[in-house]
Length: 267
Image (cartoon, rainbow, N blue to C red; front, side):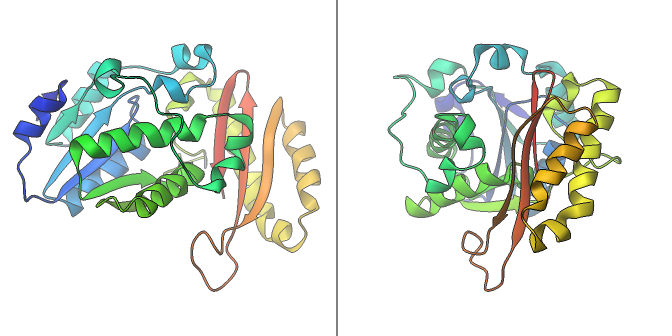
């Protein structure tokens, strides 16, 4: 496994003409990350994983500082699953002249997380665009757990005719139903169980919600009742057009807090 901290070094060492898979991460690996990486290894000749905690996408300095970090453990995991390349750039390497907040992205960014996290998606797309220009992968592997982010990145790639295919990967969950997330490392066992109950409530009631959207108010009350202190949003969205489907395709999206830890899911 080769580790690069310099983009010029990286470009020199990656062979041309190979099918290259790219998995962008912020580290603190969990089963979801490992699933993405294994899929890339299976589908591509070589796989590159980036670990870069992208400061501009955090709305609060506190969130950035509290984001879980364990680089030595992450490197150990990557070696074990036989990743070919790891890219560990510094901030200045990625942003030599600072972020590009003038970047144009999908209007879908104005909904859900975008309403509560100004500039978040622009910052995410900006960093992904920079990585794609450096790495030039054939495929990028993204999880459906961050569905809104996935669709916004995919739209940007298509609109800008970037020669990289988005591979959408299923959400990986814990046995109790909680979607795998690096933020879960900050939660206590009781908090993880509480978060899993949110998933179970929505899953159990999804068909009823599709038939009657007004039930969302009742579901919100149920979620507050189990001990969730703040729900940012709980929305039902028909993704028929976004997914280019002929039939209706609904997902329930939620963002909620346990203490200061923000969790998202879609069911």
